[in-house]
Image (tube, rainbow, N blue to C red; front, side):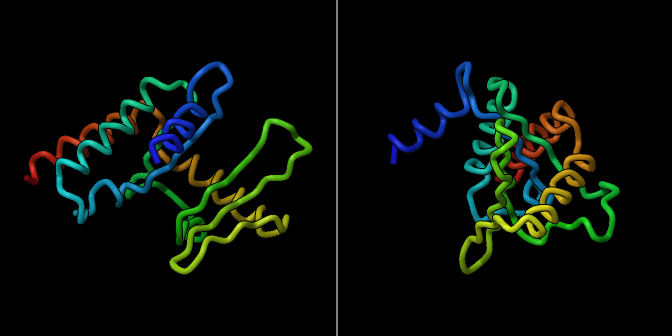
Length: 144
């Protein structure tokens, strides 16, 4: 497990780092988690550190009041993979309660590509998101 974690972190650092953009719904920052407040604080603090110290990592927060259209709602988590080579296909992995779905079908991928673009437009900028994450981390400490 430790070796796998080290490999995942290496992918995000160095001159050939893979860019990673994460958009978190504000609900995950505000919902009282099953995890102890200190654990939640440490996780949010880790995200802040990654966003500040790893140029390949961008963390953005989708605020409750975001201006999303009624149809641009992410009903479940998904990962939108794009590649530097324009000949490589975009792939989407959709997380479900039963199993993850890997989508290659262009029509389905386009729906998620459009949704990802809409979420990105509606999310806070990187600096505002870091402030939001840091405030949410501090809020966790007050819940002890």
